[in-house]
Image (cartoon, rainbow, N blue to C red; front, side, top):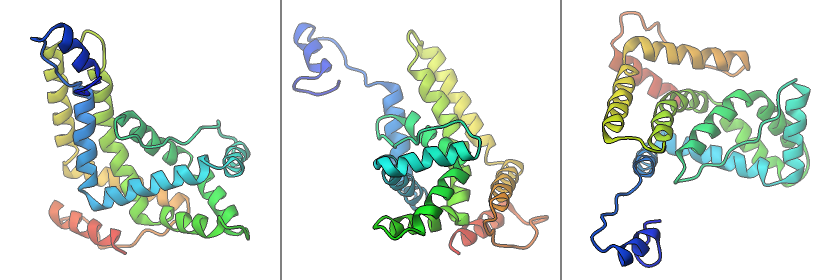
Length: 229
């Protein structure tokens, strides 16, 4: 699209030299967000696990069939896992969402494969170990909460006929929503949701002292320490 040699930008410039090229704002948003993710070690490792999980299950017919079977046995609608694509933020959000709603089915697949004697058993065991960690679950909930906001903005920026006024309003609204998520009440709610999710799956959640009366910065530090366990 923006290639200087044969992209649409170059072809338009040949016909209309004074035309000004403006990069897609949704694409620019995607690039900024992805760059931010890569600079946060916890999220970078989290998405690396998600991509590895997608490759492990979806790029093998036998493992994919096992995933489909696992969903059916749990009485769930069959969903396909999503890969992460650098230029498509939608895929990043969908990959997180699908892993959360099919967490139990994925663990069942990994558990079955880890007990097998084939070459996939070791990789399955490693992925299962990462998915059953409090670190992974907490990152899953944080990432989904953040990305649902930016995903909405990304989708609306791709609407045909969107005006600059509407664009500015959308950006301001997203920034406000993200700022509100930093409130103590929102942080506690998110933590409790992740904790409840982990406990329903029988996954250990490190115990800490009660958060009543503890400053937000202190609680964030405690969470950071728990992720290192």
